[in-house]
Image (cartoon, rainbow, N blue to C red; front, side, top):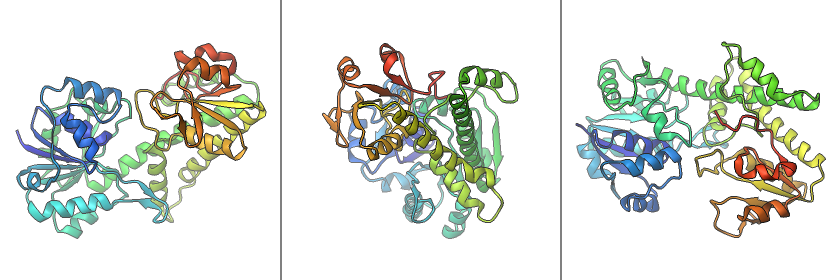
Length: 389
């Protein structure tokens, strides 16, 4: 049993804290006072279905601290899972929170293994190793999905460990002892691990964009998108994942990761990758044009969350659709049970579903579900399979 400190208790950090808690002495820290207070009250601070379930079933209370310095001093492993948002001014991910955390750690502990799970630009871990003259900094990317953050951490498809060769056995053993199932383990360099993360998410974004463009053509030519996608997916080389048409890919990870990878290419040829974001933008514009063709008097926006099982509204594609509809002076109303206020961004929130359905002349849903089926005649969606997978 080792002492582990988790810095940043968002989806990634909290999933890792619950993953190791019970197996090791785990201490969590987050800059958000409210989040720490909720955890101390044994309340999961995030509405992610798998995180809530794991949190409630946890055999031991997660220990959180208001100041991590003392915990750093006695830590054997420190996992950094702080946000690395995309900065438009710098044309890249903002790594300042990761950098400052490493700096704070090394002030009081020069022996612990530092594991970065925040997404990084290509070559960042090596730069940190050189900058701080400290070899024991590893990059272990996460591949979790919101809505299943803990289950994806417990039972990953693969584990990629980017670290110096002498630290790889320790890190492999650390994760193996807590995994819920065996999985392939790739031992590699930090830089290659960074590339794996960025390319994996960029491929998912590309795949979503591909099937959305298929849906564009099918809609314009009176073709059945369902039949096209089903037949294409039966090819074992293609498969059935990430093929459900949507208004566009969105959320916290895919948009920023494809932008970062495109930036990392620099002058290296990358026509395909550079077109993915453009394809997504065009898809959103096309969706709005289809909505406007129906000349709706009142558009009802059904759910603002990015996907089922999550409370995350950050950069959800429906928000981009709303912005474009606002520019067309469309009257919008919203159904979103997670919003308790009567208005959101100037639009009326109606969380009585039947009242919402009655007042909307057209209901727009990126993802439909059983609740909204009763409004089928008013429903505008491109969702076929009712899944984000």
